[in-house]
Image 1 (cartoon, rainbow, N blue to C red):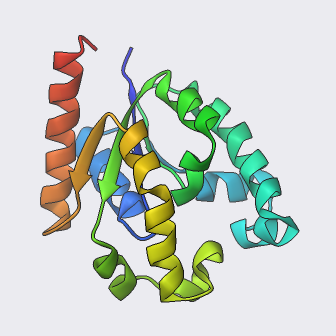
Image 2 (image 1 turned 90 degrees about the vertical axis):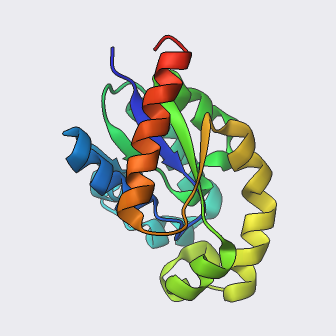
Length: 171
């Protein structure tokens, strides 16, 4: 059985970009969880958040169960997947969890906070969210990767670390 590689981390840390690069290199299917949820629910993430954050988190939990049953996929999660432990438990059943840790200053410099529901309050919200979630990302991951430097090299490093992790853990 080939495990999934699940990327977790802050909005704007590079999960979606890295997942696409890795999927191409490893010849595996890629799923961007937010896109997957939007297409199956026929609502945008923003529309679900407009109902309530709890509503969106319930939907996200439902899909963490479904995606946790897959094999050999690269999955880029939403930044808040770690807010519910059961999401990580569901995904971890058949996955290696990789935390993409990117300096907050780099995230702030790159993302448009107006397009991210939880970051619409501005730049301060990014720092606040990072401080709120960093212990969750670090606690739930099997591997932590610092996303600094050239994105292609970061993708290669993730692939290398995941392969090493699988060998060391007889997976």
